[in-house]
Image (cartoon, rainbow, N blue to C red):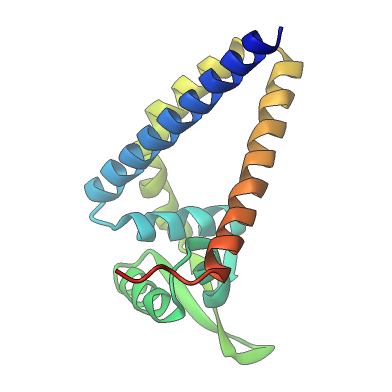
Length: 158
């Protein structure tokens, strides 16, 4: 039934938008509690996953200009969250690393949420979890493609 499929897709899209809104509010609240900006938190989250990254990679991942990333990294370094070292292979590049002793502090606000998410996942079969993982991977690819497209088109004035 095409109408049933269309309704299911509309429900999925609404649920995705609401999840995105709530995720934005959730991350903003956590950043505020840690005395960080959302961009700071996104940078630290990226570094927690990546281990280390260049300042250019941080800029690409956060969508910030290189100048804004330089200021953010200086602030995070002064606050003791990251180290920044010149790349020995290319002295023009800076390698940024999350300080491991600060990682637990950043994970703490997510502990209850992570436990709830694990409990939620327990209710799904392995096949359902794989389906969800594929869906999120495809959504990530879509977001990256859209971001590339948006960056290629100049913003409208005013």
